Length: 483
Ligand code: GLC
Image (tube, rainbow, N blue to C red; front, top):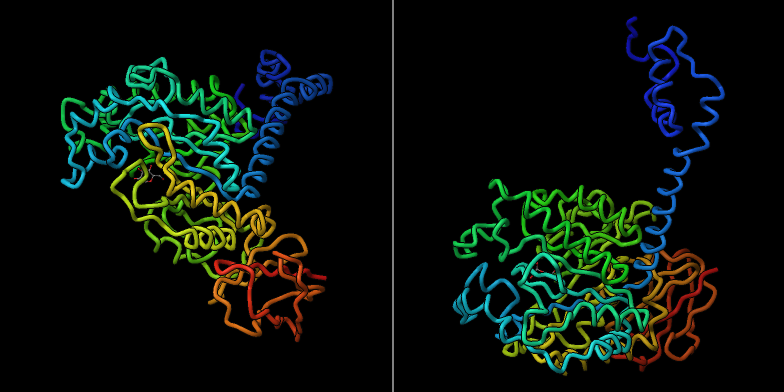
């Protein structure tokens, strides 16, 4: 008997449902029979079994992910740590072998052997986490493996790893334990590009010749398997990852990101995944800059080109149009430790960057490169503590906020929460400031000390009388309560 497509009452979907009830054979027989309607008892048993289980597993995953996403959006400020044996030579991490430059004074051979001298005897993970807390940072992201392929964890699938240095101890284990002792969420930076792995590229050649990898070679799938095994190790051996920060160069589709993303969603449903694995992931990742406008869905932002934000539509998106994002930034000009790089950003620049990021709904992941001894140098630590002091007074205007209703102010920024707008005054224009586009206002005060400020409102324009001496020369926050 021949059946044309769509004929009869049993559809593909029903077949799956019935398969869940273990009745695939019966269903197939019925398809071949003249009477194509499944019996009521068959549908009854199907709908109460595996199908329901499967969909509730998905619902649980979705809920775990949503909770983590909400938490991450509220957290706003994280600590990025780029650390590995490159710190011994005070050069940038990985790049000296991929794009050699005379300024690094190091050959590829010297670079790949630095691990034999890596012995950070002063490393104290609790003090790092304590520093992040003092800075007001709510999560930490650590380089488990950078492009050079060196693993800062005790992977079973390579010898190029931390436990084979003079230090011998598993640094990721120590950091993960310290984070869990202090309830600090820890995310894993993991680089798909891997200069050390012979299935990623022909390692008999200098890395500068083939650092983008050689996916056309037959051994490429072995490299993909290596990545998958290592990601499984990270998920199963070191505690639940808050997030995965994949980092890549171009053409990330060669890593089979959709497969990896599905694997990670199953193994660790609440972990967030960034957008650098050839999939959209959960959030955009501009680097070293703050987009000029509020990121919305449908616009990809990854990398260092500040022009990327300029195509975004202006204005204030509806919540469902907003696309979560995080920018990562160095505190000087190097990701890894480089004692010669003295171009430190000022505390003022960092605080204003954090506020600028928050005013557009994003997160700031601020980087440190610890020394080869395992210390976070004072120039970084001092600035982090300064930001923390500002946040102790003004944290309410950052954590748990979203993008502000007024964008493009010359003298400051706005952030917002349910019923409240925070006006961040960077450079006081003096006297009265007027803010257009405001809903009816109930009360206006300085966040630092609760001093009530006189205000007038006509239509949706609010005029606020600023005191002559504002509490903070970097950013004084005015709290505006709405009706
Ligand atoms: C850039 C750098 C890389 C660093 C990353 C962090 O891509 O090249 O070394 O790890 O930024 O996002």
